[in-house]
Structure formats: C-alpha cells, structure tokens
Image (cartoon, rainbow, N blue to C red; front, side, top):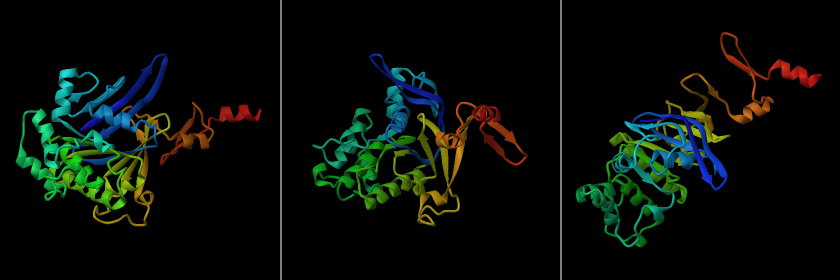
Length: 295
C-alpha cells in the first residue's frame, strides 16, 4: 500500500534549510494497522503529511497504491486526497465544524465531493458508538465523543488508507482504548490500511507493527508485534518491549540503518568493520582506527 525509499523533505525559509526527513525507508502492506513512533521533531508528522498529500516530498520515492506522490500533479493530488486517503488530526478543531451536529459534520465532506449518502453517514456514527448522539451539536459532546466524530468524518469518502496524527493524545486512557478498538474494527472488517503517528509506546500492543523514527530523522528500527498474542488480550509481562522484537531496517540494496546510539556506544563514526562468521554478522570499530588512537 505504501512504499517510501530514500524519502527526503527539506523546508526552506530565507537562507535556512531544515531537513525534516533524510532518506527514510518504509513499506506498509495493504490491510496493515501500524504505528509510527518518535520524539517531537523526529519527522513523523512530516511523513504523515506527505502520505496524506498535504505536503510535497523533496526527493526520493513515495508510492501509495497507484499514486506516485513525488510526481503527481495538483489536479490528481486533489483526487488522491478525495478518493484514497482519510486523515484524523490531533487537534479536533481541524476535523470538526462546531456549529453543526455530529451527523452534519460527517455529511459535509460528502457534499463537497457531490456524493451525499445520509444512510452511510448514520452508519459511520453508529459504528463509532454515537448512534444516539448523531443529532447533538459538538458542544454537547465530550472530547472523546468529538474524536469519534472525527474518525467517522475521515471515513466519509470510503478511503483505502487512514492516517491518524496522535489520535489519542488528548484523551484519557479509557477513551484511548475505545478509539483503538474502533480502529481495529475498521481494520479487520473493512480491510482498511491504518497508519497512526504517536509518541506513546503503549500503543505498540494494539497494532500489528511499530516503526520508530529517530536519529537523523530516518526510519531506523522495526518493532514487530508478537504473532502469538491475541489482539483482545493485554500484553503478557506488562510492558510493550517484552512482547516485541526489534529489527534494523534493510533497504532493497542491502544497506542497514543502525540506531546511532548503538554505534556511539562502540565509538563507531563514519566507518566500521563488518565480519561474517557463518552464523551472524559482527560490526566493530575498525582496527586501524584503534591502533591510531593507541599510538
């Protein structure tokens, strides 16, 4: 569904250049539910904006289904955003119109596309647990209920891909669990591909896979969900790390993306020695550099 290779995004302001993404690699399969984690400023929201057609990449490759987002023209980009992708903002105000009811909010994007379907709009609100609240104005709904309206809005165009930017960042843990259960329901029953950006590692047990973005704003590590865990059961052992296995990223030409702190711990800079002993690959500091330091 998604393929990013060597993805670069550079923002320019006057004479200043900010590299938000530098060579990011990412693959997402159709029907996968995954999370992208990283600290503030790591580039995860920039990636989501590019996948959502809200920002243009500077270089590299980014393919979503049949769409090449590096080369797509403006007219096709509008069609992509209208027909292929749904977006949930961290700030509800960007999804919702406060003077409309929940139902009218869901119908609004349908009206823009000329495909008003009131029955489907009501069905979406029923799916997110707001059957009895659909005619309420937004100020009559709680923050969690408003976020569920935002989820219904994001599905109004029947997208193939759902992107969510910190969808549980402003709600309590109980509401967060409700929202993640809704995502899983749409993922399983509709076959919807879902990508969630978050800084909350506790969500790792509620998705199929987690990709960490860090160190140079590059995708450096996969954390794969234990396939023996049932989605409806809590993580055994209590912590997400105990139920996941970490992987470094290998791109299509065989290059490894190793977390910087691992290299720093071994005092490895821009060069390293690699040996294969028949069972594993060993990466060490070059002996010549060690000898120079000793001398």
